[in-house]
Length: 510
Image 1 (cartoon, rainbow, N blue to C red):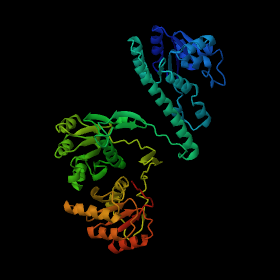
Image 2: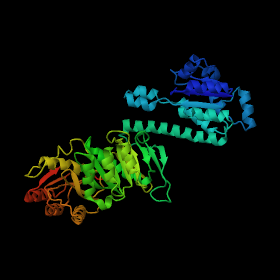
Image 3: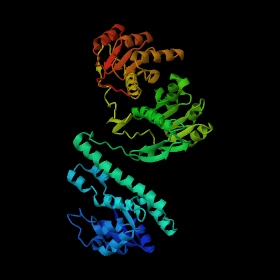
Image 4: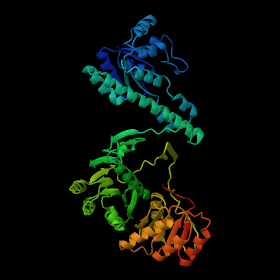
């Protein structure tokens, strides 16, 4: 039996090779792997002894050779293959252990295109694909984490076709992800990121219990390792719908740096948000905005949940609490509620991955775009359009309202007063309907919105929304501007003595 080992990530490779030798394998290797194994005292055959051809072109060609690929690919169940292998002097290779040149690490550390090109693996993917194709006879190993699994199967005579098939699937996932990364990088570098093909690759974190509904399958995938590293389950099982709500709530709660922000989300939309001196005060104020919708909702906390906050949260039914962290006492308190789910990041404040792109499924495909972000000084640099200037508190409320609006389903409006959201209207076909719906709910809940700041994620097409805001006692408005009726909007604000700011940037979220 022979094994070919050629790896960029050399962690654990010495022990793996020693164990294979003990099981009766001859080891073939190349380049740095060969040197490392030889220095470790492992009997190893250099690949050029097998290929009968030297490595050439500065190592660009090492294993692209019939003695290598014939040894991997010839079928052991066909006598004609066995006869031809014997005739050509091709010896079988029964295990291939390859992980690929570190392309990702290279593009993260340098912009030198020549170095990047040289870190595109050619021979590695070819060997992986060959071994995977012939999985009926050959074991393909592409992950350092699988060394022990492979050895256990070999030692326990459980090297079954089902095991090799699983390794084959993993191998093709590996090469597909590798090629996708290269293609996406090249398109980003030369085609503005919008090439003729767009590859979206994710690694599974876990299966969800089901999808949006019980008859649908679901699973969580990640682009990097953000979720593997920073989504820690303390209690319960995150559902497909939970993950969408957690993401939405966390994006809003984390959008204000180190501030003690708390966001409550129901069915993908914020129904409460506040920033106060303490997290418990923030939660109380966030809950006040819409306690009816908050029932059974998802809460994101930009900080550490302690016992007093946990006690307060337990006064109503919450489905999910997601926080930077929890104290042990808080977990114990919240766990008294049987149906609650608790997840944390294990950090002091919420940290988002800030993906550079996003996409949406449409019938027959998907639309893909650069991710939308509110720039750090976007609100600060907004242009005063009215005669009246906002007060300091209004400017703070403007930032909150504007950022929340940018992360709320369009058409939307957000009302904020004293650093807490007091009304929100979202997902409406008309912006004035969104404004009126928000005010109507606030009135039903007995919430006083007078003196609040109103933010819209897109321009007001008519002054009717400003008229409705005046009736509610709004004192300050921020919106992108850009309507053909902007002058009417400005005139209305001046009539009512409102402060009016144009940001110059729309933030639709559909």
